[in-house]
Length: 120
Picture 1: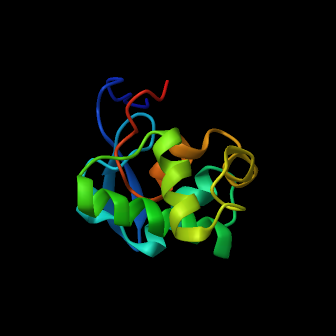
Picture 2: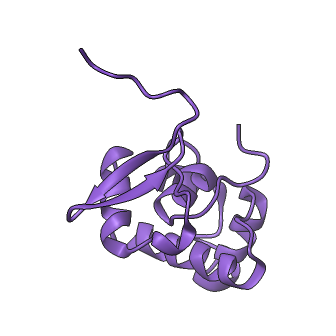
């Protein structure tokens, strides 16, 4: 007989035998537990392959989080990327191409950040 967890119980990513807790949507419980290797695993669960463009976004998100201690909403993310990576990459179309399930939501999950405010 299989024992089911209650819906609010934390789940885990398994990274080299270490259990890394995440919530029911896949966001890390502890931001400090993030590693690039874990990002690759999370991306796989999101059906994405991490390429240089996606890594650029993840690095920009993590940098923003280190400064402000909050994950940016999509409008802010677009502005940050336009400033750091240029206008060709600082636009919603570009971000949705990289993260089709929602750039702020999906990229923040891969970056190990909390779910951005305003994401449904």
